[in-house]
Length: 356
Image 1 (tube, rainbow, N blue to C red):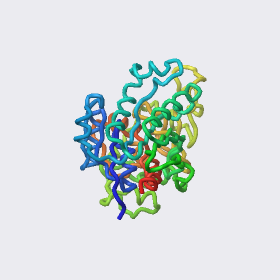
Image 2: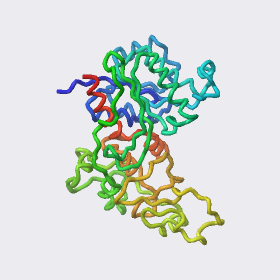
Image 3: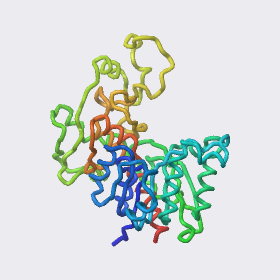
Image 4: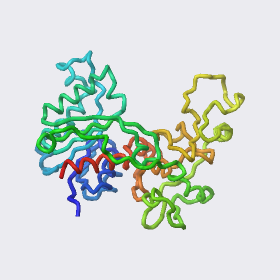
């Protein structure tokens, strides 16, 4: 039986990273986030975890040690927009945009985990000619970690979505002298939009928010997604305004706003973003799932509506057993803000080799 290394998730959101580590056989012992619905979702899905809904700066060192006495891995996505060559080192700690990143490092200092994993926007690694990347690496190196970072694409790890994120892995010097090897993370076959949501098409006219699938899953990814009882929660189908339905009805799979007849727009514009009124393609991966609902830019491959909460969650690689707490808008936001669990699981599997 695999040893279940312990994980603390800071800025945890609903728990996308944690779900990935859970899939990889880790034990999720804690989560901290400022969003109330997100922490309720986290606690609902990780029953053992000690969860705080608060600003992490309000949790003092003694409380950290008492709440999480043994942590093998700290994960999370702290904001770090304030690292700038114009700011210089002496000012970066005073920049309010960096406050939460330094609070994240305080947890690392207090708990001294074997591994630290940070997730962030892909622009972090190139911003300001790489200054932010270099400062973060320097700070973690000074704390006794061997640091490496890479932009990863979720679709390489079995996620039906082309989402790219910066992943930083810092290994404590006593468990690894060499940097984390991203190149040896196992690449998985591509999964399509149809693989993720095709078996839900038959529910389009069913007037229930919880539906049960009747047939057995017919692909490995669908088998992974299914709950034991085959119920599909949060698949409430809501259609937009008639004019929006009319516009999107003209858009083929893979098309966008440019396929909409000009007379259906209230004014003439040629500068809309290419993602506006984009219809997903069944045989490809989804674009990045965002946090909106009524204003989302991407539409269902067949129907003239945006994907449901569950369809969005499946495109993020959340299994159906993972349930979200909160209003419809809050659930969409939680799904869109999450790291795809299967991408996190791929990184977690590789991290386990160093922990051994």
